Length: 321
Image (cartoon, rainbow, N blue to C red; front, side, top):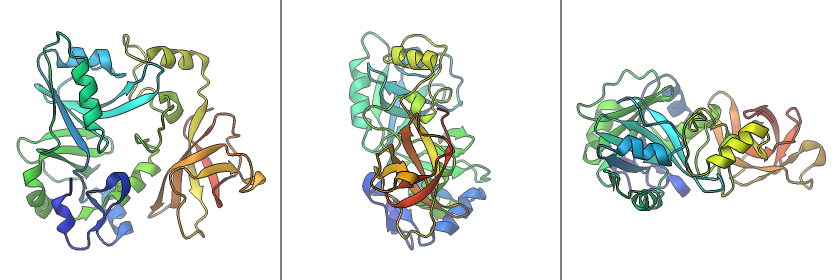
């Protein structure tokens, strides 16, 4: 779904999974600094929006999600996952309940599969699920923003800012009142800096929550059964996830950033050494320079210099081995 904000001056369309919104509006670092200072907004209208209504919505979702939501207070934001039977991450939801409806935004293009799964699990519960992507757009206001929230708009507020479920028809008027706009490249750079994993980037078909630091944020260890819980409990008790997320400071002399899936190796072994992991996300940061997240084998020494493709990389621990 193409955003009308791509018509704003300087807008350069994003590619790949973020297609449909602006990558930037002409000045990546200025946009990053604005977000870091608590000004502007990010158009995330390409993300999927799913709602769950009905008096059983929280108790029903509690059975399906990794998060404790049966008594979720109205207005309190949370994150949750849906796992496979083997404990691998299938869906990631950023959600809030407004007292009558649970609103969730999800990765672009994943709402169809999520909706199909939720429909298959309704049984006798008094719930209704709906894809509201055509009618509502996600807009992000950074932490510290003093911008007001339009009346009647559902807000999901976290330490990183406010996500608004804005009527899609109001996008252009919102942009005119709350600029300047920042593109998804600025948003992604700050996400990588904050070590925040993203479905489809920091995850693959076998990623478990422990590997990318989601225990405690999207996975509640004291709640009842859900699909994949056995794997979560086993890894929690043994304390040995097979891989771990790391943060990389990349060599700033390289012209291009390593792409998603770029092999990560020990620097001592060079570009022909044994692959120990792969780059998941990379960005250019307005203060830190080129940075990345990577998923590496658990036994990679935490202080070992690495190389991402041909780019030298110094690692910081995100998930302890």
